[in-house]
Every structure is written in structure tokens, then in C-alpha cells.
Amino acid sequence: AKAEAKSAIEQAYAAYDEEDYTPANWTELRIAYNRGIAEVASATDVNAVNAAKQTALTAMAAIKNNAKLLAEAKTAAKAELETEFDKYDREAYTTNWSVLEKAYEDGISAIENAATIELANAAKQAAADAMSAIKSDKTLLDEAKSAATELNNEYAKYKSSDYSVANYEQITRKYSAGIAAIAGSKTTDEVKTAKETAFAEMAAVKSNAQLLADAKDAAKKVVNDAFAEYSSADYTSENWAVLTKAKDDGLAAIDAAASIDAAEEARDATVASMGEVKTYAILLEEAKTAAKAELKKAYDAFNKSYYTDAREDLDGAYNNGLAAIEAETVIENVQTDLENAIEAMNAVKADAIEVKDNVSLAAAL
View (cartoon, rainbow, N blue to C red):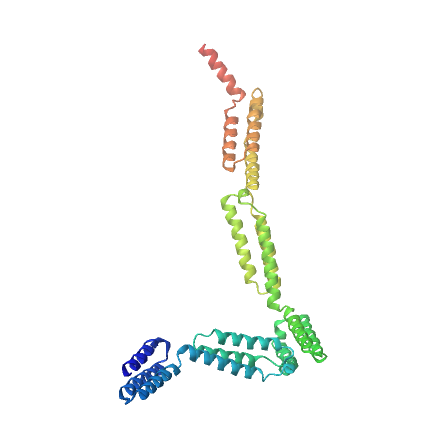
């Protein structure tokens, strides 16, 4: 009988896993096991053996494993949370009752999903705190009534020195209208709307700094838009660099402006400065004009009386030069066209030179 009882106790003990118990409960289970083995061994009759065996088996089975402890903790936590939830009066939370219910339900769900006793208790406390933080109708009404104080504090933040006279007066009017609207409100929603409207309308009035920033943005847009109309293809590389620098310097001057007038003056000066930078076409035309004037000067220097017979050749060289200069598309080639024309005119022989050449030719013959 003792052998059978001992074997039954040992088989029952072997079915338990230490990992399924807290250290303290596993110690109790081992104590129950050892006590049962000892009592079976010391029993003096079969009845005592069987009683010792049953006592040991019952004692070991009664010790709670982690799963049992967690289930009990969850049940207790949910009961405590339900008790806490029942303290709230639905009539006192008409506005936020659905929010309070959700906090409770989320808490129950979090407890149910907790993996440990500590997490279950933490979920219960978090839900209780969340419910406690939800405002009752009375709290909401009291807060709404303090909106006038909030509006006073907000209005005090605005300094007349930061605004034009007209704009500061506008802020004051918006503030006064807000105070009157709050005083006449009959619901928390009306109070909220009145306060938010006053806040927004005061904030919408622009300070001197905002007006200056807007003016600077507008001025820079004018400059950038004007610059966008220019194309680097229309300028020499040097003049495009000049134009770009004029734009960049202008934008910097606008940014540094201390007043709206200064920003607008910098804008106008920059647009004018960019407009003064000469395009390739203008430079080419100037080069052509200068070259034609120089060619005319050279042409006028000839004594036409010496070119009675060769006048047509002289005029042809001159007119061909003018035509070549006028048709030129490259600035660097204009000077070459001028020099070629002058060289062509110089190559035309005056009448006396031609006669001398003819006499020399006759003598040679």
C-alpha cells in the first residue's frame, strides 16, 4: 500500500512543471509533496497510508499555478474597474458619456489581454485614471465660463507698439466683441465658438513685422518675376553675371530693409538696375553704330577730287563695308569688318596714282 501511495504521489508531482508556478507556490507544492511522501512512510496502517496519499494529492492540486493566478487577477481587476465605473452618473456626463464608456470598455479589453498579473493591474489602473480624467458637464461648464479670462490673457499678449494704430484698434474691437459674445452664450458650444472666433480674428490682424514680411515677399516676387523674363542666351556671359548679381544684391537689399518703403525702393531699384544691363543685341548694335561712324570718318577723310575716275570704286568699298557691318551677327567680328572696309578703301587708287601707273606701264612697253 505504501509503495502504491508513494508512486501515486510521485506521478502526480511529476505532472507539475516548475515554470508554471511562482517560486513561492512551487516551494509550497514541493513541501506538500515531501510531506505526503513522509506521511505515507510513517503511516502504521493501510487507512493511514491512503489518507496521507489523498491529503498530499489534494494539497498539491490546491496550489495555484500562474495561469490560475492570472485568471483570478483578471477577474478581480475587472470587478474593481466595474465598481469604479458604476460610481459615475450618466446624467452628470451627458456630453462625455460615450467617451467614459469607451475608456471603461478599453480597460476591460486591456485587462483581458494582459499577459501577466502586473499588466492586468496596470491596465485596470490606467483605465481608472482615464475615466477619472474625463470631464463632467459641470467641469465643462466651469471651464467654459473661464473663457473670458483666457480671452483677457490672450488680448494682453498684443502690444500696441507692434501694430499700426488702425490695426491695434481692430484687435481691440475683436477682443471686445468676443467678451460680449461669451457673456451672451447659453451653452458650452456657444462659449467655445465665441472664444475661438475672437482668438482667430485677433490673430488674423497683421503686426508691423508681418506687414513688412509680406511687403518683402511681394517685392522679391516682383524682382524674381522680372528676372525670369530675361534669358542668358540674350546676354554675353559677363553681362549675364552682372544681371544676376543685380538680382541677388536686390533680393539681399529687400531682406535687409527695415521698412516697407525701403523694401519697395530696393525692389524698384533692382528692377531698374536689371533693365539697364545691355543685351547682346544692344551691344552688337552699339558696336555696329560705332564701327559705321568710324568707317564714315575714314571715308570722309578721302579727298574725293582725287578720285574722279575711281570714285565708284571708293564708294563701293565704303558701301560694301557698311553692308558687311550691318549684316554682322557677332560682336567680335564687327571690328574685322571695319578694318576690312578701311583696307578696301585704302586699296582704291587715286586718279594721279592711276595716271602715274599708266605712264610707267607705257614706258615699260
